[in-house]
Length: 347
Image (cartoon, rainbow, N blue to C red; front, side, top):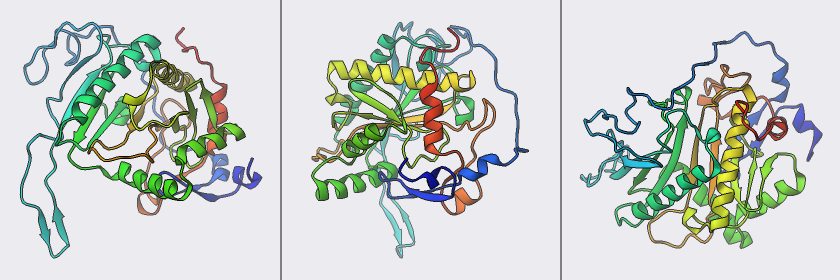
């Protein structure tokens, strides 16, 4: 380890992708737990739910009927957070009250017709079909001159605010580059100007050399618990070749991407033998037509579970008022995840 004290003494770690810091307090893992304890959701879902808005052939909330789809199914969100052609005069009162119009398009991507199959339980070929759908949507939305950023993400589980259990992802595309990718863009550019290389290329080389936080790798991708992780079992998926977005992945890389998604989500489920909740998302270069030679495509997984299938990490108090904090070290989390089997516990 870089410094043995990191495993037992409080310290701060810098997130090189945002420039922000996280407080790590490993000694706190020894404290007794008297907080919330809830029973895990052990209910099994059917392959088809006649009451589900997303299942094939069912009526959605807006009255539209889903087709009898056999693979992925994509549609414009019936309750979109962003709407096209929204324009109004900017608000700026004394540089204190500031607002700007924001337009966009929101899409929903059902992974499959199966109401009960998450990524962890899908076959890799079916996950590759989802990736191909993401590529198609990214290409179409990114070609729209009104769209300058495309965010692909998944909220899995009621704990993460998922309003429908049918496995699906969302795509929010908008006219502005949102805050989190903008933070990363600044860090990417600063590092690239100074070193002439992608910050993630060099970071991944170091992680693979140290092998303290790598939980899985194949020919094209590696999954690591990042050195600066905030969430207990947070992971970062990084392609070994620098690409700006998923459209630049070749056929082999798409197959390997499906493989690493399958493995990471399976390990999550195996950790507490539950359908593991998380928010995940891809960070890709903006689609405003500019050159982003410093950008390196990557995917974040932010799962809330801490001690069991029912005990989660809360962002409260110090985290809301000062900065993020974690107890279990990223190295300890990585060791646990790395040692988990890649075969789903249900099998």
